[in-house]
Amino acid sequence: MSDIILSGPEAPKRIFFYVQHLLGIGHLVRASRIAAAMKAAGMEVTLVTGGNAIDGFPAPGVQHVQLPAVLSSTTGFSGLVDEKGRKVDETMEKKRTALLLEAFHVAAPDAVLIEAFPFGRRQMRFELLPLLEAIRARQPKPLLFSSVRDILQQNRKPGRDQETADLVLEHFDGVLMHGDAQFVRLEDTFPLAADIADKVFYTGLVAPDAPEPSAERFEVVVSAGGGAVGAALIEAAIDARARLKDTRHWCLIAGPNMPAESFNRLSARAGEGITLVRFRKDFPSLLMNAELSVSQAGYNTVCDLLRARCAAVLVPFASGGETEQTTRAEKLEALGLARMVPEDRLSGETLATAITAATASGETAPLSLSLDGAAETARIILDRLENRSLA
Image (cartoon, rainbow, N blue to C red; front, side, top):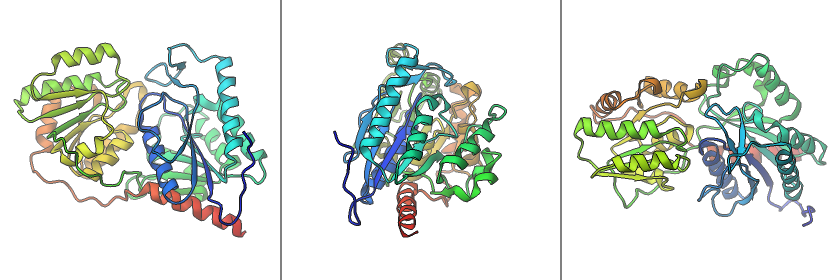
């Protein structure tokens, strides 16, 4: 296939967007929302994904390149395995790198977005550093953006922040912070933010458009995210429902990555009034009917909650030293938008107490955060491309 693509004043801008999800699916969901917004803005978008394939992502109309899947071997993201659990070796790395570079040259993009890197996804340097060099070498050089969630992982290793800032300064034209500066700023979780301040753009949170309520109604929706480490949350929810003697209909979403053994065990415990499923691609629509949501505090789940405006209890993922979700949950609790149960204190009892507190007033706090991050990302990219063409 030729990589020569005609361009001109009327040609749509071409975007090449790389995303690698390892444990949950949050990165893929956010990237898919942004890709759909760029498509709606008239751009041609190629989304390159490197995790396991998930039905429904990306959205129709977005060109999709699926690399051979790699996943995290541990909850701490310290190792990579393929879909069969085999350690990713040099042969696999070279194969993925070649396929990624081929996709880049075929797409011939005007702009490239790399999700998380260099602030995260250092495990993927074997293919991303060659991609950076390919971008640098291409003429005309595409604009390059880092696409980053609102809160970064803290407690980074010595020298890691400087390495990140150096990569941004050397290679990137912008850092798209997908958050509201009134809620959290880059300097809150990245000590060298001042060094790259002139490259940072706040887009607002990448929330979905307000969906139509689902025809199926559940008063309580419990979600374990991707599901790889969500069994404790689902089990605590079953216990809390029994403790509260709650007769409402609960939907428990275990997540596509929950091990079969855990899912089967929890299925056996789910009694009358409880529907246990692995995945619902209409999750945002389910929340529109819900009185209460119980979930982890992942970026996309929180965006869905803020659109739905139902009462919320957050159990932030904190294993392996993760701090991002805890920071987000604490900030939302401080704004009166949720109740939080720390992961290390999760039980049927603590969850029941939080549920009671979250639903006691029957009202939710006013919302002042921007939720239009996908459309704003598209606007920023088009604006930067236009400014470059006029330079």
